[in-house]
Image (cartoon, rainbow, N blue to C red; front, side, top):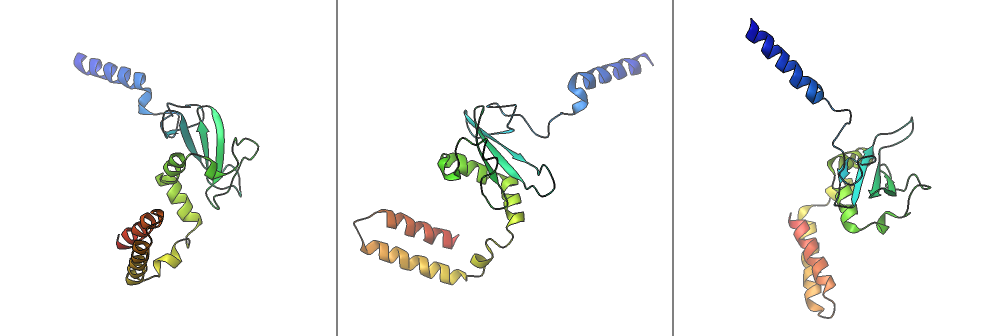
Length: 164
């Protein structure tokens, strides 16, 4: 009987210290800006995916560099939101690694896909043989020109994407 009381007291003590295993935030805080972000990009950039705040609002992403609000992007049409708060006013003004990290986030992809259901519909209708053929023609044409290596990279990229 005494051992059961000790186990019960220890269990309650452990649960009390851990806060009953519950957190007051939906996801882990950022090490860059724990007040405003919940996902880090690197040591100075972070972001947060927000739910709609009111009826008619949409999912959107706030991007910060340390504690400075740099940009807010709507996920329905990928345009700017919170224009007065933003330090830059074009998504393309952000570093490419920041753009890539945000757009490769699973929640961001999910919401963009939800809002834009038919965004890739036309591309899915193109037969694979046509994509591979067009890409092979691009590679052949790029082999003819030797002055600009950028077209070679583009053509090979298209071919590899078509084969994937």
